[in-house]
Every structure is written in structure tokens, then in C-alpha cells.
Length: 125
Image (cartoon, rainbow, N blue to C red; front, side):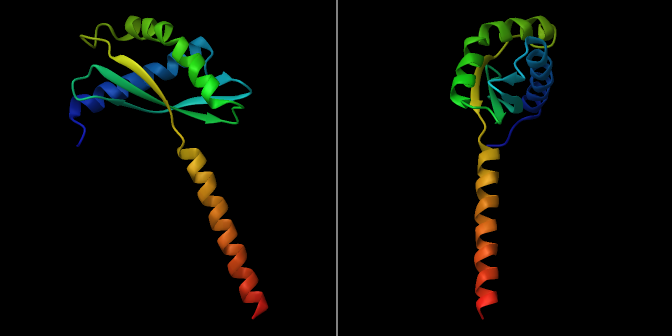
């Protein structure tokens, strides 16, 4: 199902605000790596926001995700202060790990192996 115009507007607003909140609360650098917000999706009724987090060189992404979920009330309080005049209801926050970077790295490794095998076959012939 396609996202509506209002959903996209709210998601864009939340994305910008979350970036500022993460920077202010010091959630950008955790567990020896970097945490960034890769995307925000809002349900059609605007009552739930799904925040996708990307982890770069983080030792234990699951533990970092848990720490962020534990601070969800603090993040929501900051968000409420920033957007209370733009939204009637503040959506419920749900955090998810965005593993697209891992898939990209795996795909690059596979392509590298394929190219190496192809080059080895060409050299043998």
C-alpha cells in the first residue's frame, strides 16, 4: 500500500526531529560505533512511528537497540516538546534495526568471490 501525503510529511518531520534528539541525547555514538536513523515510517492512522536505526561498527547492535528502547520515554518527551504544535497526537515509537548495510556488505563479498572465480577460470584457459 502506498504512503499518503500526510504520512510522508509526518515521517519527514519526525526524521528531522529524531536526528536532533539523538544528537542532543548523545545516542549517535554508542558501544564503540555509530548509530544513525536510516528511516521513519508512519502508519496510515499516524498513531505509530517505526524508526529504523542503522548501526556502523557497533559491537552488539541488539544491546544498543535495547538501550535506545529503554530511553524511548525520554526521546518521546523531547519529541513532544518539539512537535506539540504540529501534531495532534504524538505517535507511539517503535525502534527497529535496519540491516540493509549488512546485506550490502554480504552482496559485495559475493560479487567479489564471483569475480575472483571468473578471473581464475579465465587464467586457467
